[in-house]
Length: 176
Image (cartoon, rainbow, N blue to C red; front, side, top):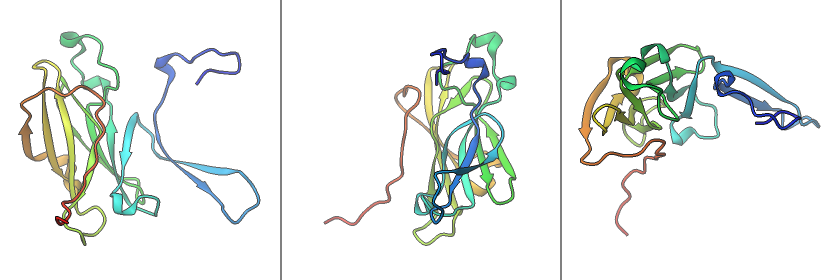
């Protein structure tokens, strides 16, 4: 956002962090407490949708490590460039990542529970992975709690999808 004089910040100075904002709904104040949960560039954080708006332990998101990007071959990265998937245990602060490759970037991940009654975190992370050199896209599926082990399945898409696609998982509903 621009400063008080209307000057926009330089893109190089912007930092994206995962933070939790806590409001005391019993207090007669508008103050909030900010707690940084993940102090590295990240975006599109998701939790198990069954826990949205409630206390949860597991989060998945996109991360960025420009040291691992093939700048020499590809030039500047595309807008909204994130080359890692991240799983964060928000209670312990421990994280694990899976890197897609030096010429790849991810779109927003989503969490899919293993079953309707699975415990929080027990399931899969689905994300679209764009291959910048071949101009192709694939869907990667990873075990959520073993994210660093990499995909358990890959689906090569017959079309290339543009960057920044959002998605959700909707379980199959019985036919009406």
